[in-house]
Image 1 (cartoon, helix red, strand yellow):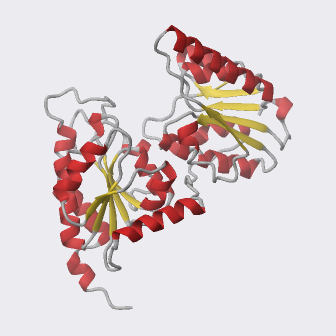
Image 2 (tube, one colour):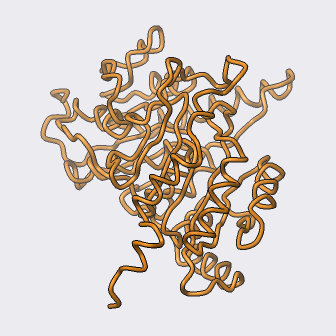
Image 3 (cartoon, helix red, strand yellow):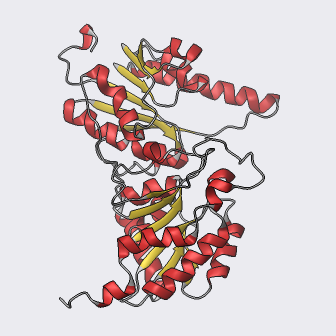
Length: 362
C-alpha cells in the first residue's frame, strides 16, 4: 500500500463498474473483502441506474453514484453526453477518494480514474488506458475465475483472496412480489419449479431453442416440474416460442426488475441457462445452475464449484473463441451439446424418477 495510506483504516474507496448486471453482482465479493480488511472504510460504487437495483440492499456499500444513459448520436446529443460526463468527473474529483479501482478499463472509466485525485488509482494494464493508473494489475492466468480476477485488484491494499462468493440481498417487497406471482400459478406442492434462461444478447452464446423446448418437456415428464422462463427487453417473442413449444406446465415470468426476477428465481431448485448474467443472479440467491458454454470460458465465468453448478461444452477446436457471432455456417459448439447430454447432468443433480421413488419417506 502507498506509504501515505499505510495504517489508515477509514479509507474512502470508489469502485467503478457501470454494467452489466452479472459483473456488478460479482463485485459484492470485492466489497466483502474490503470491509473485512478495512471495517471503518467508506465504499462508494459508480454504476448505471438500471443495474444499481442489484446492490441497493447490500448494506456493506455506503454510497451509490448513479449514472444515466445519454444518447451520443447527433451533435446535440453528443454535447449533452459530454457535459454530463464532465459533471461526473468533477463529482468524483470533488469527493477526494483515497482509492479508486477501475474494474472496466474502458476510455470513460479510465478518464474518470485519472482525474479522480485518488492517491491509489488501480486498474488493469491495458495499453494506452493503463496510463490512467498508478498501480497496474498484471494480466491474469487464462483460466482464472472472474471472481479471483476482481479480487486480485485488492492485492495492492494488502488483501490476498482467492474466492469469496457473491451475494444478492432481496428486499421484502421483491420477496412479496415473487410470492404473489408464484401463488397465481397454483403450483402443486409436489411440483418442482425449474427455470430456463434461453436468452443472450450474443447469438453465439445461445443454445438452440429446440433444445430448450426438449429439455422443458423432459423435465415436466420425468420430474413433474413446473417450468418458468426468464426473459428481458427484446426477448419476449423468442421466449414465447419456447414456452409455446413446451406447452402445458410452462410459463414466462411477468415483466420484472432485476431483483424481482431474482426473487422469483429463488423459488426454483435449478436453472438451465446459457452463459449470461441470469446465471450469476441465480447462483447469488442460492439456486443451482447447469450452464451451456460455447464461445466463453467456463473456468472464468462459471461459479467456481462446478460439482454444484456444472458447466457443459462441446469438444471442438473452435471452442472458447470469444466471438459475438459464430463465424461458421453451423453453430457447431452449441449443436454438439445435445439435450441428452444436458439431461444426464440434470439427472445427476436431481436424480432420476426411479432413484426418487426409492427414497425413504421421512
